[in-house]
Image (cartoon, rainbow, N blue to C red; front, side, top):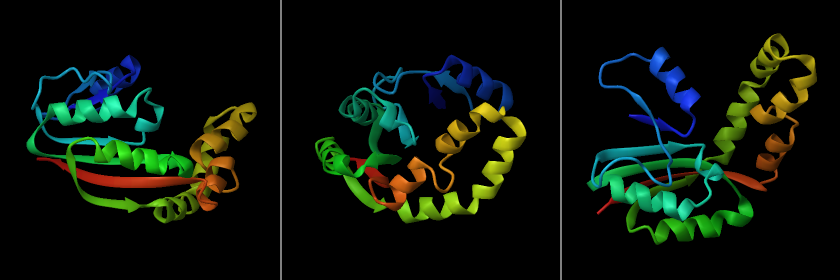
Length: 163
């Protein structure tokens, strides 16, 4: 089950991906619309930085995970907020299995796809949007890219288990 807060994204995914045992559903990560102990695995990538309350989100993940279930999380954070993020995870009751700062990998990946992103932007976006799209996609030389390089922003990955 894929879940998103955008009805349009859910509708698009349900149209594009018609595989057995796969469906997409509208939902709020801070109030996950499933009963306790529903999932063996929860994966959250590049979205929790947009949530109003990360502690509430983490509590919801712990609630919907089955005992022994796993939570995989990857997200960007301002360096100044890493300690608070770690504190939230420590208080979650989930057991940390692995954590990694994957910022160097993200920088390398952004460098590798830079030219392809520029070509896509210039081919498909109106010219007045090029700068905004470059920033949004983190092409080299943008504020986003430079924040990763200077370590003002970091990209973290964690694997946890419900005990």
